[in-house]
Image (cartoon, rainbow, N blue to C red; front, top):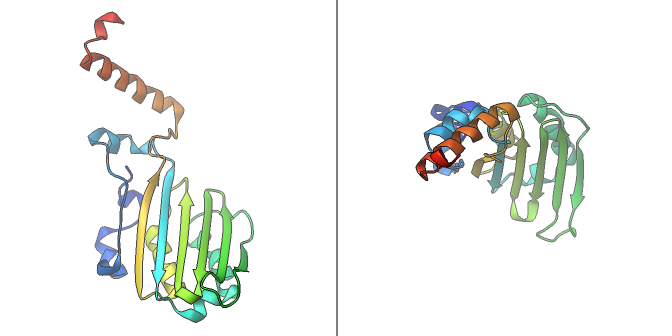
Length: 188
């Protein structure tokens, strides 16, 4: 499991984001060994952001959303590999009307969807490398001025090996432990 420190967020700064309005749900740890193996395990962090009662004018501004997606990768130390795509969606005047945007980064992607009729925005930042979560949260709050925020930081693919050679040693060790616990070591 990645710790909050490995994802560049300081627990002491959480109140700044409105601790009474913030929800975090990192993936549960699989014990002491999971923490030690985190450097070789896991595919990467995925920030899921929901902004409620956001500033209406910010939810419809195509140019501002484009600028956010254009500058956010650099701000959180990711690598933009294409210009953002931003477009309007839904039937005008319907609750589903809004703006969606996407930017592909070398590490994965950043996407956002606004729903002005609901004064709601959601964003996803998924990366195979750690990124500055605090800066990402700050940028999203500045961009949309939500009255209430909920966010989750997921550790995607916790069992995915980042370095195959190191993972082989972990698997071999675990197999030896299982064999020992089952009383099978003598039969090997």
